[in-house]
Image (cartoon, rainbow, N blue to C red; front, side, top):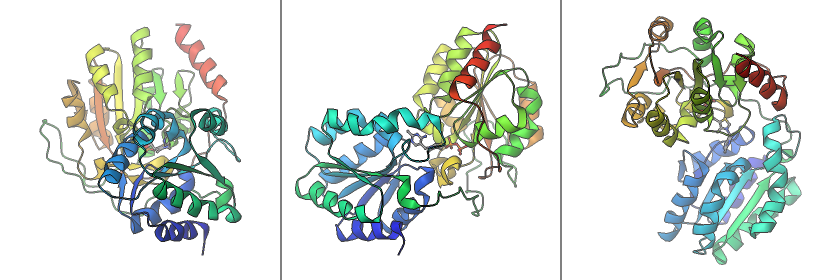
Length: 375
Ligand SMILES: Cc1ncc(C[n+]2csc(CCOP(=O)(O)OP(=O)(O)O)c2C)c(N)n1
């Protein structure tokens, strides 16, 4: 029995019966097993999961969460003012990033500080680093439900041995409705991948200020068209369009954001702010593969029921377009005039085989700042 299965057994034996989840690349197998074996709701942001678990616990569930440890950055208030204040039971299994063979520098500041942060706030936590630590999971489950308390388990990547590679999806393109309230074209029968789309629009990106989303979008952009005017995000999930807005408000140059469905759904309010501040020089390319592609293709609600173009329009953005073939997208981009623009680009799931970006965060910043501020 592998470690993930052992954890599942402990969760089942402990009576856990309700999960909210948000993905991390390091726990793909555990994520899939939990979704197959428990009533599980994939949420749009970790904080939302705290609310849903609170509600489920009030109605009698034995609630738990599976998240990445960065999620504590957006859960702290809800955990303090809801879970702890009302003394609700909640077990959190968190993939602990930033502490063991971490390749992404943006994971380190929060990951390393979590134990001190938990001690300061008074969150009960335990670290799980190897098979011998697995009984801590059972202890935490019992405490959570017997004492009606928060219990956190930080699962070190050390636990999984070999780092799990991100598998490309073997599933067919998610079903999407092509009916739209807006006058938008239907989807092409065979969608392209993010990489193929980026390749087809490289000319449009040339010399513009480009803000690349966390994970594979930035890595693919770096490989296809590294230029001094590219800013690559390494963390701060959900903020790519907000960073783009800040740049667009301070620069007269054209700013292009490469956003994703999972990221947009985690911060939909940012589109309302963009609509209200209305920078003419901002274009958002919403690359919608229907999944969290950078963490292993866990489905997002755009694969079933959410239409991002209608959403952007409903949040106040008036220049909304949709294209799924290179020709359609190229025509849209060639004819943009005056933003903010929101270009919805439905794609197939799948990441290109691209290395990580060989620049430090400070190099990324300095190269970009120099390019933006020198013109
Ligand atoms: C707060 C937080 N939770 C989880 C993650 C892990 N994570 C990194 S990228 C990503 C998926 C982004 O998905 P999407 O915006 O759809 O882009 P795609 O990778 O599919 O292009 C997730 C969940 C994170 N970095 N930060």
